[in-house]
Image (cartoon, rainbow, N blue to C red):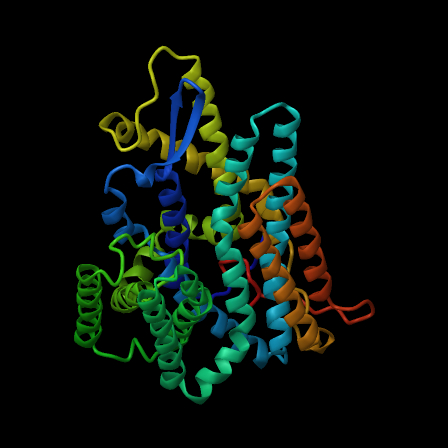
Length: 434
């Protein structure tokens, strides 16, 4: 079991756990299964009707997740340096923490897809399953890059905190504007880096106490102003009111969402700490935080499996499956969510061992054994494998290549043979070394 640091901020840990829960719930609601004369149809239920737009205003939690990632990352980096560690070791530890559970998940997905092909399942269904599985992996690649760059961005923050975040926000807006004027959506994918780095930088300001130092009135006005700016951007057509659509590619609408989230979190932080101290909420936070990456990586295989089981049951039942977004469909969502959350939680009990028991070696004073070059190479190789899965799709072949790349990334981020082992590592509520 990890040792929970008494200095951890329980409000931050609770917010992170709620973000993970929000992602699972959102993806669960987007699964639609129907039957046609040709066989089962697996569709994105979010494309049925306009229900996803208001739901996205509640469940688009990724901006807050990256803000919290910046808060936790900067706090961890500074604590590491006080213990004699280095920035290279921080990046290397992030590579290991993120990629070890990813290897298991993607490796298992590739093997399962191969078994389905051998069993004679239609190639288009296998391709669709691989595509759906791979969609959420964008987060793994982007978060790995942001955390790998965190020491560099922290240095910019220490030198010019306001100027650095303003520069990133300005670049993000410039990318959005160029995309809007040119009509070339591909330009927007530059913001896979700039939007999320801006939000991570916002987390640095939170970690420094700069945001909490503002009066409650100022923080409330800032949040209201960001909401007003969002509404104007929706009405003008600059941003889609669907905040999930604003993720692919990322837009500056997510920056405004992040500002709202951060301001409200700062205002509500004392109350969240009180809530997080209760036994039930503390148990929930600890459970999710110590297996956050495992839950994120495995909830989609759970959803795909449940969708397959639903299709098989539907084919053998006299009553047809309800159409997505219909009244009958919504009435079945509570049971669907219960099955999803229960199956994901049960699966994470065993699989989280990979996340919890892979301590971030090299986080002690002897961290010089991991060079900056090796750590950077590990981050680049690890992120490149995610790009492969997103562009080419997840298949037995691409899964095998990705696993091979991640094993190489882990090798690059591992202390060379003969390097001194660190002493006991203090691990926070999210399972990461502090």
